[in-house]
Image (cartoon, rainbow, N blue to C red; front, side):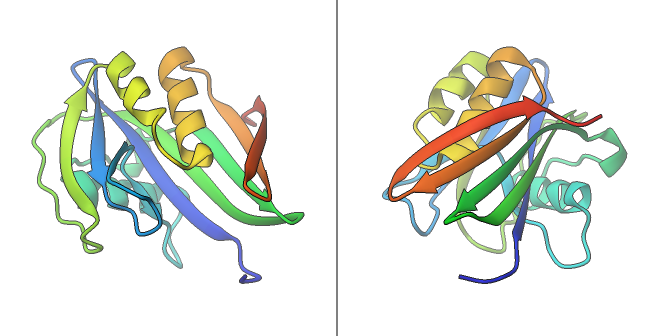
Length: 164
């Protein structure tokens, strides 16, 4: 395991009351799953800049950093060490046209869903640090800081208000 904390970013993009999700075949998942557009925040990028870039690559949707509102932060702890932080934002986009240009080739399609249907699809994700905050945000709209701990193959988590 690396000594460096990995950084991820994602966006809940909304258009006309619907939520954009991508169907992704992630390397460690058993099948493709619907997920919020997200990915690695690159060296030198702010979490917001990386999230906006990932949204553009995975969906073609454009959102300036200034339009992104932080809605959850997920910290993952394994063996007492923080291994990753993921900043996730929400924004309303002005153009709903998808144009996938994913350099990783993991995105199979992008679609708009009503929030309740998006939340139902996200419950199937095999990775709680991505699924639990996304579902909770779509159901409640409450911004939270999530801390996930993995022991063997069991995940537990706690939440706290996001610092303002």
